[in-house]
Length: 188
Image (tube, rainbow, N blue to C red; front, side, top):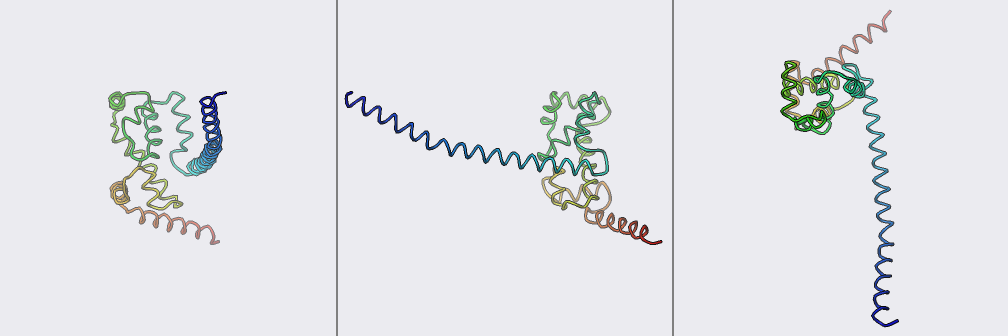
């Protein structure tokens, strides 16, 4: 073997050794990512379970099942908006993708049912927010985020416009009502 071939073979072995050493790091990264996915999947299941137990318009899973069983376009749009709220502000483009329709088609089909995209988003937000505020398990900041508001002050203004009360005031009122009914049950 000449020196050129020997040098080439040595270089090849070195690059193979480097590739072999770096492979476990990649494998470790993949394993960490899989663990994170499992953790997030468990957290999502917990959140869906919480929503399923909450009073109101039903769980997200039930809404999804209804939407796939031939519900109206409006119901399917409501489910798509509810799903998009988890990602922040639901855009008509994202909702259209979920419905396999263009934004213009979403507008037109909602118009045929006597509503608009903005009204659908508003009603889905309001239903979710009212349920979460009275539930009391999440902070006002968390509720604002889950409802797709950019900041808490915008959420508070919208909630007051919808109900006439600030979110904290509505929660306090709900707690007082719950305590009164609890006390009434305890007395003979």
